[in-house]
Length: 334
Image: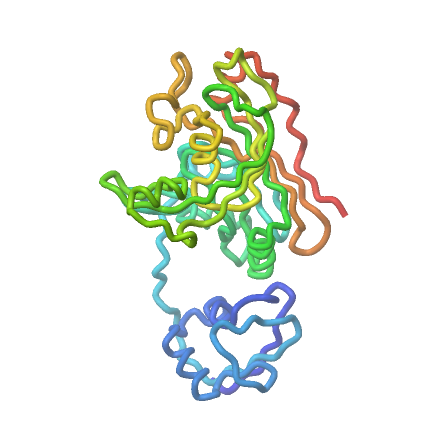
């Protein structure tokens, strides 16, 4: 194999150089690529580059002679049978050349972990829909949270969507059924959070609680977390349907903010609400739903995507007399 010059296409724009090589030359190990970069064998537009260099459409990548043959695939995947394939495809509520949006059910883990074998990330090959690229996650939902989850279909889309989440150029709306009724009925929660270990695993706590637990008062402890909330309906102070609009995206932010700041834990959230989070006669699943996303499309325009309530929340709405509005169809606006 001789030296090549390859032009970066629009689909690979804004991709890291090492990921570009993994995609087009899977037989090349990360260590071998780093050595070629250090010695100047790999160049971008004639200049030295690093593994983290982000490529732009039209740039030329110099590729020295490479080893032949595929590299071993170390990605953790699981076999998907026909029934699971159909179930995954039925979750799709929007799809174009750049983006897939699914309505994730409660109970499906997004990624693997201790004791978790089957998870969405390991089954994403089932959602290729004929594409050469495997869809990739650009954000997360808790295992027990239902609702809108985005997948990127190209490296370019992945970079743009990740940038939207980091830069907060999107509107995220969640619905929750909480125990009790928030007072006041609407407002902003600005309560920093910190992660804390314990005998039952890691949990997120309000910063003041974290300080008391470890005997520290460092103002840098924890991360600022902000949530706007509105009470959409209530049932005689027993329960309320609350809309949550996170400004920041901390782990378990909405669950802790409801339990700690509002004093109204989310129904089914025993981790942060204890026994108070389980109202008698209701389904014990977590009542937190990622209702909608409004965000810039990776190519142009704006995406608006919404997901209907899962069955267990529909039953609770009916129990309390809450009326779920019609779910608009996902759409892309120019």
